[in-house]
Length: 501
Image 1 (cartoon, one colour):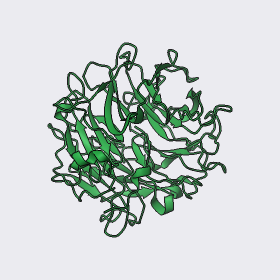
Image 2 (cartoon, one colour; image 1 turned 90 degrees about the vertical axis):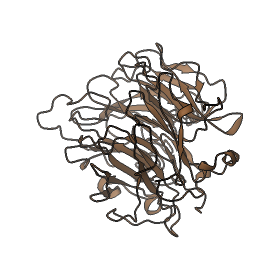
Image 3 (cartoon, one colour; image 1 turned 60 degrees about the vertical axis):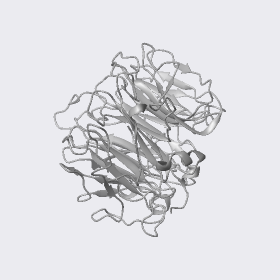
């Protein structure tokens, strides 16, 4: 049985960050210029694929939101590595802070810059841009109002930026949760942002000006039901050509009542009214703390995967698969997410390695991508509370294959720091798998697996990359990088707390 570390988790973006200490952390280096690809003056692929420099290869951004920047503890930074024909290139790294040239505001203690990360082409110039949440940012004398910043993509990579949104109430924490999608169907990317407090939904409609201004005044959907949002994502779940907003929440009247909510896209963006995803019998489908959208079963409707890593609540009595954490697959359809066709898996499911143990944290991070090129989206699932022998909370990550009927557990592969060919050694509280994402950085049709372990080396944190073959991800050829590569100070940085999406 694992020791319980998830009960005090704070949900940031797609990742439940487990007991990360942010008292002191890395001192960031200046932004590094990324060379333009030879002969490239325009992007080589459509926007919206995490390609910041337009060379046709997706890039990967990652966070250390508790890092110290120029002596400011907890200011936070974001790192980027760029994709290439040979995969992600750590030689083309960037470290971005609020003290980087052209980035608005300035690094301050507790800003938590990088608490959420999403990317899309906001200004429709053909280069993807990086949207960064800083929920600890103060606005004048209003403490921890939060902010949302964009750093612009271009032929030299990410540079410059603008403020998109600032909270206007104390402890609002704007930028804690962020999603992007075309919610009104006009072809321009829109942004949805929420804070850490009241669940008011802020909708910023694109396209955006280079000063960060949206195409229309910010629309606020007021939370009249005291919903406690834990994570959000976007996808076209009903196939109508507009993205919908999906969220996992705790009901304000019943903390243990985890729900999956959908706000359908429409002419003015996400709808004011939401629907709850139900089971076949009409009862509410249990949600969780993390959520991801993608195409698991290969059809034209986006699907949902919900992670529920936090176990031990009263509802577990009627939900035995919640032991140690679980994921719920919900396929899309003409009417949206089909809760009547949901499928739940945990580490006791056939084909899934390991065994379900209390506080394993299965589902603390979830990501969807095709790792073997078969046309089905596979699911990366972080298990940061996994014990390896007597090594507590060492962590692991699993990849569940997608099929035409969704994930079954059959063929699941797993990795940890004690797996042969994986660099490093499993240590207590590494929390390997607290963050995981699938990105095809070399554009060969197979997504590589990226894993964060924010607890590595006494909360310094580090990152791992696993290549893929026709059979899926493999430990052979995997590598790790962290503060030595980035040129940052490791003390309590929590590097690898989350990735962009």
